[in-house]
Amino acid sequence: MKRLLNLILWAIITLSTLNLLESKQMRKATFGLGCFWCSDAVFAELKGVRAVEPGYAGGHTINPSYEDVCKGITGHAEVCHIEYDQEIISFAELLEVFFATHDPTTLNRQGNDIGTQYRSVIFYHDYQQKQIAEDIIKELDESGAFEKKIVTELSSFNNYYPAEDYHDNYYEQNPEQNYCLFVIKPKLEKFRKVFKNKLK
Image (cartoon, rainbow, N blue to C red; front, side, top):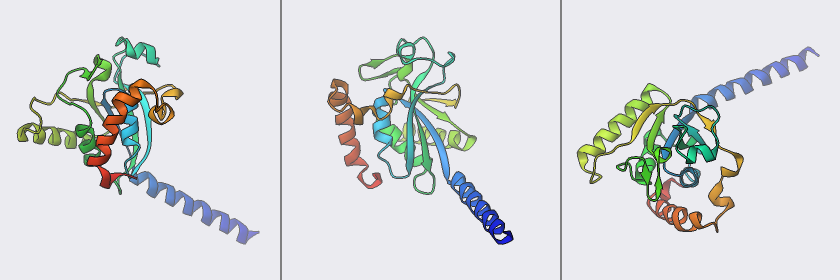
């Protein structure tokens, strides 16, 4: 009996240590870059990204609905909330994808999607993420990587709510839907060519 209890205790300690190590590796990142159906499809394909959840962040309404967010009355941005392994992919690498897969120089707009809910925004989770984002934005502006100045908003992660279940893996679930065919598919194909070495 004593031996069994010792084995159970050893197992608990081992599992706790593994969970602690994993939690040190796993991090969160939250980006708004237009319609979250697009960003969800893009970031889900990256090595090191464990999960991508479409959601709403940065607004003033409690538990907003998709319909209200689309009306632009909640203050929220459509975002992808990412869980990633920093041992495999860094926050800076996620930002590289972020800036390459949308236009960070248009205010409250991505293509035909217009409104504050489609704004370009980085919701940082700690000071380090904020600093990295500021440095990259400064470097991109100074290098002339974009013709116009970057207008991406930097905000502390706040007032986040997961989107309704039907938004999860929307592109994968609805590949023949018009928005998926004519907006997401071309963007995804371009992303796969540019970032082929970072794909799962």
